[in-house]
Length: 235
Image (cartoon, rainbow, N blue to C red; front, side, top):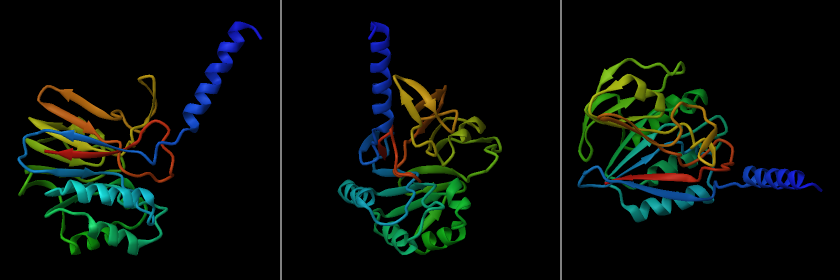
């Protein structure tokens, strides 16, 4: 075998191993200090189907974190969700004295949007739309999902929560935006190979406006080659 062919073979084997590797069982914690004087957790992309080791692990981690506030970041459920009683039980067991939510695309596409809103409200969760005052987070804004991913321009000072990171293109002001939806994309050697959004993961900044895109906490199909799940903790 020629040297060039050998190197090519090694690269192909390495690439195959890279894509075969599944990191969905891993859970990273990202702590972001924004001077809250309290603790909040941002939980996008739960994609709850039925009880499994990932959801049990997440509840255990949340119990240890003891958050004051919880923000569900959309895609709590999806088209593969079958056990609604478990979804209800899981959501009721999330610790926190203030519980908030925004909606994601799969919450709507699954047809469970009204069921989800009704049950979340019954459990004490409040939907964040426009600007509201939070006990622990101060002035916050929530943006509902739009299928065309185009949002009305608005001014925000404080925290903004949305499922769609494209919301950042419509926001102005001194604000910090938290979003999900991307599951972190597929990234290899710092190059984004696949993403469903312009903003894939981590930090983006435009002067006084900043965006943090979480890799999320679940997935519709249990496969994450380059993006372990991520719990975002705000302090």
